[in-house]
Length: 326
Image (cartoon, rainbow, N blue to C red):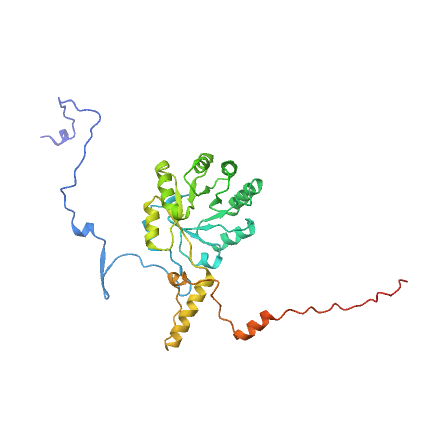
């Protein structure tokens, strides 16, 4: 055969369709273990998986870690970032030392831009801030939402008493998602979705899993978030009910400090050298009303100081009442 004829097209008499659909069945193919298992390396400590080591500092580290069960959620994507866990706290010290994907900042006071700015300064992750809906409503909530977006908030949260009309007003003025808090899968919840709420926060107490299931059946693609409770069982139940992200309430800084000092005293009493550590589970059992911080004053001095009334120093008289004006 002439080598020049190898690239010459050969006419075929068969009819070939324009669209050819083919599929390959890999069910009968065995994949070699070296391709199916994660890579390992032989080290002096033994055979270890080749995964990047976590980067931590000697002093700075994520001391408060969200429960591992939260990783079972599918999460939702916000501006290209995957969010599975949300930290329910406004304590800047707790926020700075937690590893949650986002911060859920709601507090029982009138929302203030100064508080929002402090939270945004402390956080290293997206922050969702409350803008009212209960005591604060109407034009002020809309203005707070606009200011929060300008400050850098990732989203705004409205309380359950907020009307669908208020949700619509906020959604029309900001380009960040509006999170509407609902307590039931009723007409009010549906109206808030129609008004522009991009995320629903289910706060139905013990009925949260049931409300989640009802809303998930109606909105299969709408991000739903909810508190997961304190135990792995309740977190898993909330996830299985349809939550995309879990709101986790960490112990307060006061509870963590009190728990740490209790363990310090116990170890010192046993003659051991205490090592600084934080146990969120143990600290979660501390009653903040009963936790007393360690102070360099005896108890009797504190009791006496709190019992003694403060004495007012008389204001000096520089002028006499009977002094005549000249």
